[in-house]
Image: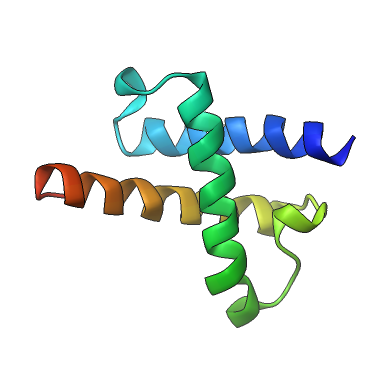
Length: 89
């Protein structure tokens, strides 16, 4: 059940991040889920130890973990845009 919740929340986070970075038209639902989960992992390893709390990948879903995961997904999309286009957008 935790995997299904992670996929759904990861998809929502990836979709929101792609809306923020204006890359929603270029991505499908699968890439949104991947961006959300990888962004959550990135934020879980880097940001969460600095501010405390539990990452969303551990199964704890709170406002703090969702915002940190969203931040990680936005940073991931910014890095991908930087590598692809040479600008963050």
